[in-house]
Image 1 (tube, rainbow, N blue to C red):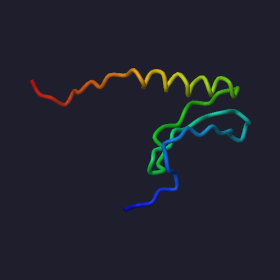
Image 2: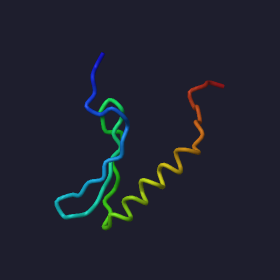
Image 3: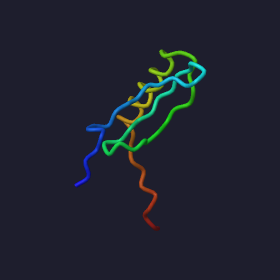
Length: 68
């Protein structure tokens, strides 16, 4: 069993060298799942996180792997 440094998936809000904001989503195993674009304000970055949470919560899975 592999022990992870990250116990649960989590959102990480950060700043770059220019002071702009961005976020990432880290999986349970500690690997980065996604990283956002750059935002000028913290509020806009947080809105980006909430927008993804809202969309993903209601998202359907479309399986395109079946053959006709």
